[in-house]
Length: 63
Ligand SMILES: [Zn+2]
Image 1 (cartoon, rainbow, N blue to C red):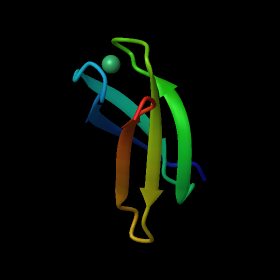
Image 2 (image 1 turned 90 degrees about the horizontal axis):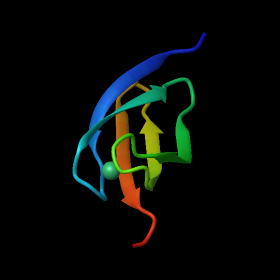
Image 3 (image 1 turned 90 degrees about the vertical axis):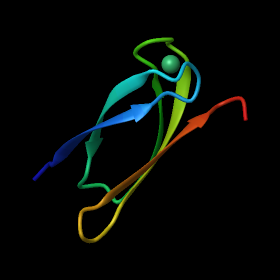
Image 4 (image 1 turned 30 degrees about the vertical axis):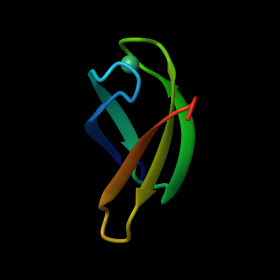
């Protein structure tokens, strides 16, 4: 079963709020997604806890 959770987070480049769709069936995720506004590559660091709580960090590739 695939579970998706939609989150709104702030882009580390342009500061705009962007929608992110997270697959909560995968407990640890690290991937790159382009910002919907400025098209820069954001590193997504996602952790899903046993209780289903999602922690997400958006990292600037240049840092
Ligand atoms: Zn952006």
